[in-house]
Length: 365
Image (cartoon, rainbow, N blue to C red; front, side, top):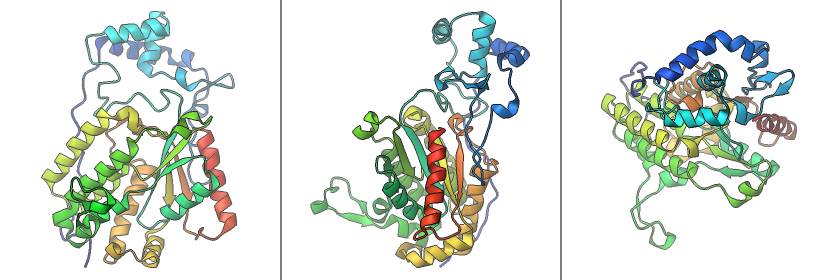
């Protein structure tokens, strides 16, 4: 059977809420900031933005002045910096005034249709990353390699077993487990019937994983790192989006999915913040070969066309930056792109090369 439905559909804009108006105070600050920006940041534009793209270049947003990096806690938005300079007030007075403003605060308002967040580096603490990539690209092998190389890191794997055996309420304990079915297989067998149900369930399972409290070892570590195998963001911008575009999810289902997805991610924005993406990149042909090698029963009907669709979705979001995003926190998240077309499961030299790039990337977050 073919997973690719018969009625393809073109891309559709997300069902994001219309942007909220800014406070008149912030509008004034922004206008003034545009005039004084050169004096605020007397440095070349190239020194303010570098990127980790194929080839190993650094991807992070770091402002540097006189050769010294500005601490993350001191990075403010244009409105905040403008207000601080134009008003001649201290940061503390500025924040108190912003909190007293009758309009929605910057932490609550949408910017250009983008759901709010407190910024990429709003505070120090554990660094959270997500591994992204196509089906059968080698994420499980990569996760095992990370666990072996960095045992002090916390790595949360994708909850595939939860999708393969959906349990009835109240029967989560092993001795009372009652399976309601293999939802992953049901989705592959009847995509038009089960795709929305599967994406809803997969999102909720990912949400639960990402909302888990930080393990004690992370809170005590000097450089704490936790890594998720895929994220609540790829659930929407890769898989659900693709299922809508190929006709497996209807217009109304896509609208409903985006509505509650945006609400929940806005509600839990601080807990779900990611500091970086690790994108495992391989051709759809390589992924199909690996898919056949691992021989997962549910995936026996997956065709190359479907993997090509998912590959294009990953490239648009993480490489070309053409995917329409609805969360401000996603706009400047660094991306480490790793070419994994060559088999790295047994090749020590390739493994060391990959882990070295990951280590450099994480250190710069």
